[in-house]
Image (cartoon, rainbow, N blue to C red; front, side):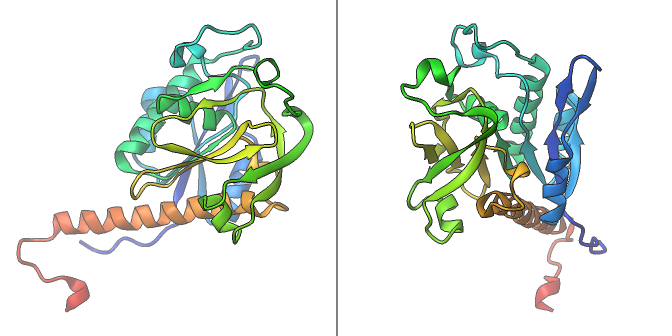
Length: 261
């Protein structure tokens, strides 16, 4: 088989939903961040069957933010009145994408709602409304809110920053992780204890998620930029491994290894 020409990794991004205009969309900041990191952005529509099939052809995944909340029924809680909007198609799409991504060990980065959907997919639960559940909570849900995030010593996020344990991030969420899902470990918290980032403990599988919006601040905040570059690097490595495996499957029995001839 002729060697395939190297290409930049395709990074899928789950869309948001505009109910008024009946359209799938996503802010350009996501695509710009992926492109700057060396990837090719691809929109994933909120059609679970099509999304799963598309995911199988992609090299990495971003679960984007959303104006909706994950349906509390999915983590066995009664819905609070502050949960004003759920969008079943978005929940279903994220879960379908994650099922395929975990099957193929495709790199995953969850952002805001995407961190929450990842957590629920893995069996975790959510704080449905931070002001009602977290004593002395800081401001988390405002277009102008910024606050300090404390990185867990020894976490990969801290390691990427040379051991630093504090960063300043934006904040536009009213929910957060309550109980981490299976295989997730807390990587960062806010001053009020709200979980701000998680890392996956899955062998040979890049899985990270943050509660802030790194696509909006990667130009000036190092950790946010690093999230995208590490995702693209992991996707590149995953694609290379898949190509090697495909070459091995197609090689005739007893054929010599081209790298050893």
